[in-house]
Length: 433
Image 1: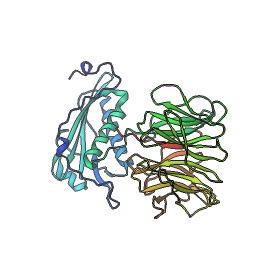
Image 2: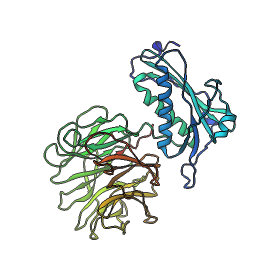
Image 3: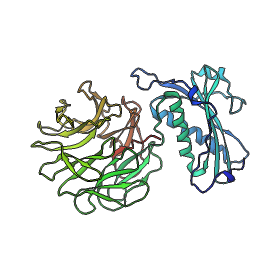
């Protein structure tokens, strides 16, 4: 195949064909089941479809990226067998051998390169049935290898669960590595960090739009903590709100048409709703204390927020239409930074214990509070993955603050960022490809 004739002007082109019909695929994993076991999947090093020396690097890298995606997802148990698959080719497999490992699904494929271009064939097999579930072919630039592999990993998740994968999402966060607090973004797994703001002032509280095309954030660019919005792909900072005092902790509504924001324009910090287009305000909370850090429920009907109206900072919920406010947390002396889960049944937050913060979960009905971190420094600012399986948060357990990842039950906590300085305020993009 002459790849040069297929790759045209675009930076990244996927030529994708369906080898097995997705309509024939069954749902193997119910990720919404609280008792679901991790799904055993094996990933082989991809076969070299050519004689180039660099193909060995690509074949190992593809399998490594896939294995890491599945391991981080919280859904899979990646099996690393200690035997040789055998020369069965990329379209078949020795299924009896794989059954012995406990693998239920198997991934294998091939890779071919020409100049700066790659062709990758990837296939997913049902080990028990001894047949291919589906396969796809991708063609793209070498520098886009990770994106191609993440895309296939998303397809695997969809075929096995019926849900969209998270492997092409990104996380925004604040870093002071440059000497100023700037907004950065990175791939969900910590790779490919990129500076998003570069104004050499203090920038805080990044929040993604539902489409993943914009980030709202607070900046001291003009001396006051004002709210800005900036597009991911180019564009200038758009001043959204510059009322005197605080313009902080933005949260987009699920529709993207409204932004919940903390303003102190009328005195103490309160929660307001701002129409994104007209910038018209609607005041949502009224109290003698401070109300801040709003987070929307997935249906957009309620907002959780932090208030010290009862003395110490606690989490409250406001029904937007019914104007009803209920207190959610009663344990702990300082609870902050709530994050409503995409499924709507839980709220993550940071609660102070013995002088430092830990991450907790509580049902949106106020029941079943669970502590996810303990004895590991200060753990703050949780943010959910779009599928509700994972949480990112900031922690100083290893010295400076860094961004960490864990499953929603607190298991498999691992560090994502390796940058110098401090990384805080993570925000996971909501868009699923």
